Length: 411
Image (cartoon, rainbow, N blue to C red; front, side):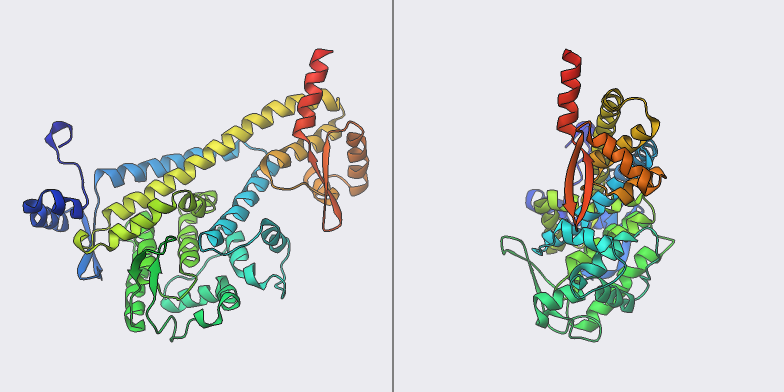
């Protein structure tokens, strides 16, 4: 009992273990409660349900509050910082969502696709996934039917699945025909995917109705759909990447799109917890209850937004500090200061330097004028230069900036 004599909310399996005589009574009171969503599908032999308890309500409030803080904080950043930080988060999200599945994709590969609008033989493996994430908050994606799910699968991961193992391509009408078994990274059996294909289509169709329904809380619908996609496991391979992308896309409709670029990061950081969420929800003795899964999914979202706020706040403080140092070293030429500030934003919030054309565009200067300014700044020995695709890219060298500032202070 917690303070006040109220029993803490426990998983049903723990009630069965510790208070066996209360098990059926607690299950019935939860399932029949006015605060319960009862679903038109089963988890194993039990009707799925979810209790809207105080933990879930509290986390939903916190998510919305943190999202507002994030939007306000981003609004305080200069434009280049916003653009570069968004790009950084996008690249990491694509890299990590593949990494979770044991698929290697480099930052260089992802950046190359972001910079092109053409699908080539050399980039087709990742092209669909990267481009979908790139336009996640800008383009509508149909998610009404199982046919929509299959079409999205074709765009996102089919090329990569075929390249990795041809026999893992979908062999049914839309999904898979044969059974599939889900294992943890330690090869522990977590779950047997739903079969036959008719049952897959039935359960996915009912799950899609949740995220479309105006009578069901949208954020809870995303969490339940995320679980159900993993539970059904409609494909031989690519289920995790599909599930995470769909959840990210749906979240971008209600929260800032940067939150959508942080889901895989939080899942990867809490990988053991994430697999346990599914294992617990699949447990027969939990009788189809999804309360804990949704609560834990919201925990991951809270961690995603908090980590974004912490990262941006830290970089914002650094930017204000280094901006002052730069003014002292660069001098009073306003265009030199403008170029230096753009490069500083990129150095702190981005992943790689900017070339002359990118600097000129960001500063609204001609390329020839930008070259002259960069040449002048080079004489002050503030840059790091790297060559990418035969073009020189520039960054402010933060270490040199600190050294020069300390040296000037001593003189």
